[in-house]
Length: 269
Image 1 (cartoon, rainbow, N blue to C red):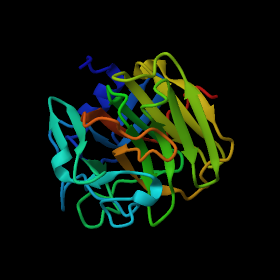
Image 2 (image 1 turned 180 degrees about the vertical axis):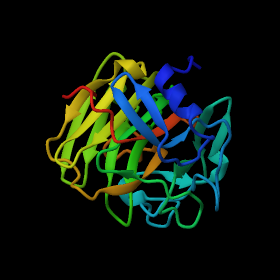
Image 3 (image 1 turned 90 degrees about the horizontal axis):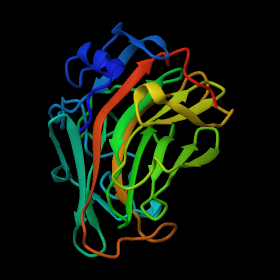
């Protein structure tokens, strides 16, 4: 664990854990803004009537999605929270499947979620610890609603350990960024500013050191809204290496926050 940095700590203090809020003004290194939603995972609020659901309508049957080259079998047993960190653990299941976990605030096949959405103009920012493995892990932070509105804040594949991938599937753009700061077990701030005509992706080792690492100059339009999803998938070998051993993998998440609007002085790519 690392000490909480000032602007996220201020944001989280403005909220009860995992509660959506309005008019929670915070000062950041990039300007004054509000916190629309934040979770610091002091506990896991999972299930109907709670903050997070554990299934998603983005998966064909809500718990698995082999057509997207994933070995996932979603289960709430893969999710735990302690000491301000959510841990998602992927373990071998029957056949080629892997039991693993996902959280989302909505479009969750009635498995829970408080309906918080990220919208045009927002900054979605998370503090994540990448899996410390080379065994097929595929963590991601992304968005989804009603069969569309997917923006991938980041995807990481264990066979490309120094690289993050970024995708805007609303207006068809794809990018990637490689850095020595990216790798198995690394703790990183990752985020996206969802502009109507330009989407910008951020990476940093501290929240006051965010670098704009990719911009698509297409954006998400004026009326974008979608539910955030955090997942640990397992590759099936089609485009990235599948697991070669039964070694479990874990994804750690300390914070997920939606700033509305994105701070005005964020760097541009």
